[in-house]
Every structure is written in C-alpha cells, then in structure tokens.
Image (tube, rainbow, N blue to C red; front, side, top):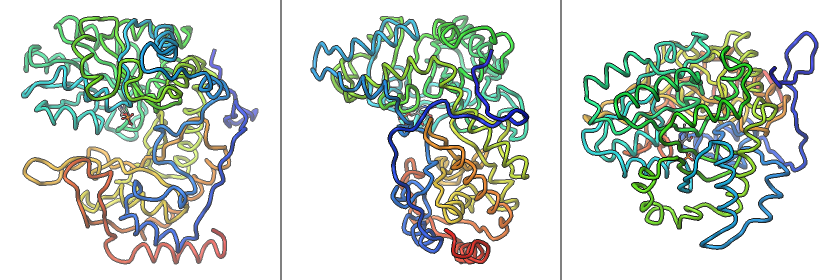
Length: 483
Ligand SMILES: Cc1ncc(COP(=O)(O)O)c(C=O)c1O
C-alpha cells in the first residue's frame, strides 16, 4: 500500500506531510531588474546571486530541508579527529540501511568519483553506464577512460511514458562487454534516478540483471546512489513485483547485489557530504589511501561532523515512504499541470525535478543557439525562477573543438525536497505557461566567455539580439504593475 497522501477526493492534489518551523524570506526583483541581473550573470543561472532569485530550482543538491531530528542529531556531533563517535553512528546507520561493513567518507559525490577513477580507471578503459553524469564523465576522461552510455531506447524519447526510462539496454551491455573485453572494463556504473535524462529511474529487476551480468564477466558493479531516494519510491509504486516490499527490503536487495556503492549526501540523506560503501574489504583497501590524500582523515573525509550526524538520521528518514514520496508527488503535480497545458515535458514525471523539453518548446532553434540555456534565461526573466540548463551547454566540446550536441535539450526545474509549498509550485507553473504562450519572443544565446572544462558552471553568454527586452516589455503589458 502506497503511503502517499492527497487532499482532494476527486483530484490527486499532493499534501505536505510536514510543517514548516524555520523560514527564509524571499525577494522577487521587478522584470526590468531581472533582465539586468540575467545579463550581469552572463545568461548563466549558476552565476545569479541567490538574493535575486525568487524560486531556486537550480538543483536539489545540498538544498533539501532538514528535519527536526536531523537538527537535534547535529547538536551531539563528536568533533574529534580520530575515533569519533559521529563516524561510528554514521557507520551504524549505513550498515543498518545498506547492510555494508565498510565506509570511506568523502566531502561530496564527485570526490567519490575521483577516488573510484583514480583507483580503477586506466588509459583506454571503457566504463559502461546507463547515462553519464557531468562530474563522473569528467573524472573518467581525465584519466584516459571512455564512457559508453547504454540507456534503453525509451530513455531518450521525451514523450515515451515507460516507467523505467533509466534502465540499461541489457543486450547492448553484453555486446559491448564482448566487443571491448571484460579486461578493459574496470566497472559498470549504474546511476539510480538518472539525472541528465530527467531523473528517470531504473527498475530493481534491471539493476539486478546488470549486477548479474557483471558477476558473470568478472566486472565490478558500482551503484551511484546519489538519486536513490526517488528511485526507491518509483520501484515501490511502479514495479509490480516490488509493491509488497518495504523500502528497506528493496534497498537491501539492491545493495546486496552491488560490489560498490557511492553517494552524494547532498541528495541522499537530506544533508551534505558523501562516501563509498561496500562489503568487499579488498576493494576498499584499494581506495583507502586516497581518502587522507584528497579528502581528510578516515573518520570524516572532508565532511563536517554535524553533516555526518545529519546524514545518519537522514538515511533513516529515506527508508520512510511517507517522507520520500514528497519529492516525486510535487514534481508530478508540476509536470501534469504543464503537460495538460501543452508544454512539452519529459514524461513520465521523474525524480529531482520537472524537465522541460527545450527543443520542442523553442521549436526550430538550432543546438548552437543553446535552446535550453535560452529557456533558462527566459524563465528567470518571466518569474525570478532559477532553473538549470541540461543540454548542449552542459556537454564538453569534441576534441577537434566542434560542439557535441546534447541528446536532449532540457531545462531542469529542480524541486529541493521538503522546500516548496504547493502555491509556489503553482506559481512556477503559471509563469512557465505564460512563457509558453510567448515562446516566439524567445531568442538564442552565444558564447562570450567559454571555459574549457565544465563550462556550464562558469561560462558567460550573450543574447542574440534584443529579445530579452522585448520579452520584459510583453510581461509588463500583460502583468501591469505586478511583479
Ligand atoms: C547522479 C549524480 N551523481 C553524482 C553527483 C555528484 O555529486 P556532488 O554534487 O555531491 O559532487 C550528482 C550531483 O548532482 C548526481 O546527481
């Protein structure tokens, strides 16, 4: 039985299963100020100041609301360098949830990726995965490895409503292993809640099949559990064979099949930090020395002890279906409302946020005018809403300097967990609908300053022409004095 609560008899309107006890004031600059601020930020939402943002939907990373129990646990943090009780409590919570004995702490998810890559990736190696994540790929390619994406075909089809669009294409995975040879594949990476294709989950069955194939060929299976929380919920409600399993049972079954699991606790566990866990001591020993070298001593790995206490409690909350349903059902509300209006959304609603298909929203705009980036800039102008470009700007150029066009041009509207109320979600929908009605006014972007690595973080772009002023003028005409 699903623990999701709705409050209307005939309509599924999600209900917040928590109350808000600490609040933060928000500001909404005028539309004219929003145009100026967007340009001061180089049309890159990463470069906006948070004080100028009304709804921060950039990411779900490190911005999820903490619970009273997490805050209480933070007060008992044991701030000792060695032999810390905080570390013992986190170890115990990890063992309780995942059944793993060993834990290597790291300051966040990409730090785990760095350590995994240093320990296992050699030049010429191939690392298959359902889909890449930006930082994962950067660490693997930095060491001369190559990423192969093997997500099932429906994963790249925005309107396909397959419930598990993050699944591996198993025959293609096996064909790749045979073609490249298992000796050139140090591990297969399984990304729960596949980030860059719209937070789409994998089924438990598919993950177990991948792990079994890895075992058959003597290849390590590595689970990126950063977005596992939403994926667990989707397994429970979408996978018929798992409907009678508890979230704990699903987690344990999955964890038992993996050689290594790593996570960003900025997402998993409503906190900050990360780490690598396993029951395989040999594998842990291969990575252990990198922790004091890159992160910090083995009791904290660059994390603040208070964050470690928050993770220990947050992981337990992740096992509560009534808590973890909140992200997906609020996202679904936003996706449904926009889809009903005709806005091209990635379907079905995934985890971490709602995703707009910018290629279809801005039909006809070529990849090299960066439709997802242009839409992100336009939405900030329309509503002070900060989304994130997940399209060509988020890719790296090819070695010959040509653009690598993204498979999907997406504007991601992340929904940090337990942060927004239903009326804020409705405000967001309202501004996206207005923008959709006025989409012909939106123009493209061009580079002004393009960094060579992870350019989406710091790069600066300029609008092509004066479309932003025209969009602001239309907003003023439609909304009058209102913000
Ligand atoms: C699936 C996935 N893996 C890894 C990372 C990297 O984690 P972090 O931001 O903590 O470095 C992220 C962050 O968004 C992610 O979504």
